[in-house]
Length: 316
Image 1 (tube, helix red, strand yellow):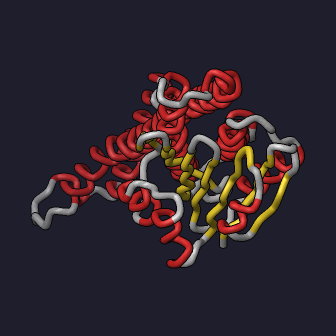
Image 2: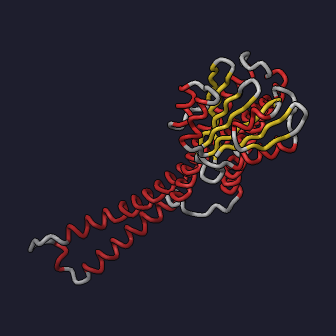
Image 3: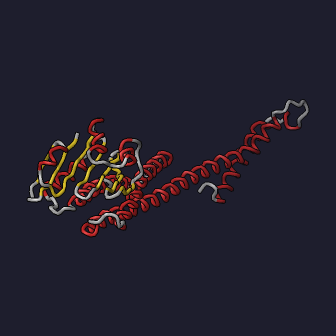
């Protein structure tokens, strides 16, 4: 599907459905949106616009890293749209010409719908208004990164302020899950930040001085997002170390308890082993109260060792 939003020189906004209709109007600039295009519509990228085959290939195959390429007076941008719920990314491509912008994406995106509504309600009438449409698309894409970052921050806040319940292993799994989400978010935010830095410093886009402040605003948003991701990663590292220390301390306590029990029973086992040997001429075997005497001696020994360990603080 192709949707076209055109701005005429006499300040009218047109919504067209075919590229052939563009020749019927005196246009200042236009925006053609390719959403899940058919094979015949994809051919228009080369037949109608004459875009470079490498740029068209980047649109059709794989998920490219955010980047900017220049093909003569056409500037090709690869952008990433991200779902706040799953953090899965989809590619959105922009071709920016002298008096047009072409967006290409395989699936409908609400960010593109919001950008279209903004341009409809507040178009830039000048010839390079297409660059403002491109800015609006990028701004909407970046704005949808914030809900994901804020959801992760809220989840981390629950770790900090929530009740310290048992279940260290489960807590560790949750921390690692958050770290995995932060890694996905970082893989999107950092390349987009680098792309915006290139856009701000390029000399190839002639109209950029008119919109430098707009793109700087997006760059500031990406810097903030990168700081949020990095600070949250540091926090998850602290939480991971904290829960691993708790787990190690718990294991040490268990091992200490088992060691104390083993040490107490070692002499008792020794005595029981001595009197369990089947010799006929053992001195104490003929004692009338020998059995009870040995049990009393074993109980006294165990109690004495327990008291000594208690005084030493081994059970603290």
